[in-house]
Amino acid sequence: MSVWVSPSGEPVEGSSVTLTCSSEANPPADSYTWFKTGAVASETGRGQSYTITNIRPEDSGLYHCRAENNYGALNSTAVTLTVAGKVNAFLIVTGILLPIIVAVTVIIIYVTRRKSTQRGERTQAGHPALHSDFYAALDSKSRSPDYDTLMTVRDAAKPSSSQNHETFTVYENIQEKCSAERQT
Image (tube, rainbow, N blue to C red; front, side, top):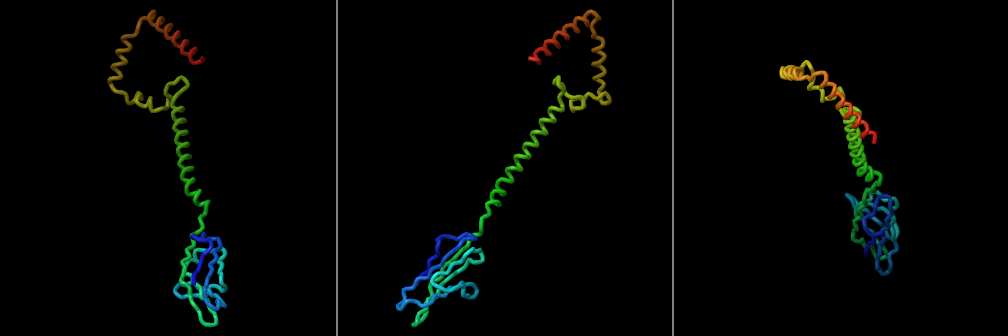
């Protein structure tokens, strides 16, 4: 006596499985009874084939059949039926893609904020903005005595008014040239 499981392999939750009992009894078996063996064997069906539709993990276990004729009964060897839980594609996709989407979003937000912060610290002329950390060290309340010494030296080295006029003219020429280059 033997039992076949169709389709072969591990059934997936929600599918159908057919168990078929084959007996070479002479005279042939009049009836077939199916049992699921657990703590106690319980009858699960009758007939040479037993089909479980919409199978669930709870249907996993050992199954055997009993073939009977006028001369007696014979039990088959048990077959193990293991039902795999249904794999939810949505959960798989969510489990893989969600962390990737979150990571990419965080990176985009970080880069965007970093760029806007850098742009905010620069004026159009390319100099640091007045409220940036660049000027924090130049706070007049926190300047050292060395700063006062440098200011005194600078004032003493100021050029005469004619030198000052020449320097201003050179500065204007450089400024006009830079403006023209930026426009091209």
